Length: 529
Image (cartoon, rainbow, N blue to C red; front, top):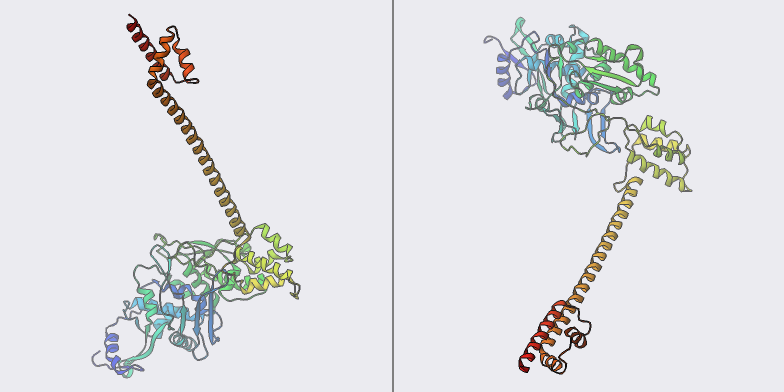
């Protein structure tokens, strides 16, 4: 290529040399070398919000809400030249990522290709209409700015979804989109040179992360006219693991795709054909038989790419709702997946009917699938307060008021407590009070018992002290006893003891007195002899 010239339009002079060197060295295979490839998790997970909706919207805005309706995050996509991102742009983005893999994965995200090689990966035939369609798509990928506020996530090797701290700065999927000409004259070759943005590159190259996979066979069979099928494929591919089976409601899918239909049958008509299209091209399977697919929803299995069916599955993800519940036990995993439908207490439903809301079950089914029971109790008490206010008048009745609150999102006061919680608090206080009274009674009984024991010990000590005093007194009074025995040698020691110390019961004292009595008698007998 030394005799060829290289011209790159719309690139500064300082960059020209670097791009020229890279273009001369990069390998641009015509055949597909990477039939199965990984894609950025965030772009796939939020594909319905990024590429769905009307392409003529000047500004797409999607808010992520919690159960109470509080805004947790925002996704915003700005238009370029009156056109916004559309479902076909997702296919072009996937084809560009596949080209990046086939060309060796440039660390800076650079790709060089002809339109023919891009058409091959999209399964399109070269033509004037298709050429213009792809060119417009590349312009939108380069010029439509995306802003993700508190929405960046990453999937760990164990399958957990964790938040990623990033600045909420607008970005485009393509950082650069230019044209380049290799050679000159009849041998000149016109190429398109693109560069993936740093956000996309981070999602493709971050180590230790699991990313959705897609097979080129599915990519080539999806068509621009199948816009709903394109969005549904991205929705399932971002949320399900390969081979996983899960049930999805038509209502939830319609909300994700922003399809508004008054009647369930119309919604099914718009969603069932795209599902059967995905089943036909081998992206998914539907468990229900054809005659029973018009019910509440469909059971979907995401098929693994050919040759990867036996790969071990390590991802474990719960179901994902339209509204994200936040602040639960597991802080490092965002609970982004669908919850089991809530079954409400019959007592709560009866209380709503007593407050004048006759069709509470229908309203909950239509508007309140994701509302918590705590929020319903707060709404019930709000309705009761409204009914008690004589100045309050709701022209269409309590049912319409509850429907409006459920549809708009009912906010629970921070200090609100349900009747069960308030009753439990009162019950806990009563139990605590009873425990305190019982503890006081036990302490009182123990104190009384100690007093009685102390008094008994004091009485016994006093009695023993009195008897010991009597012994001392008796021993000191031996001369008096001697005088008694001189007068009456026939005196009994027991009678003498009882006479001098009436009521004395201590055996030790008695024995001592008897010994002293006999000793004195012996002394007197010796004196007389």
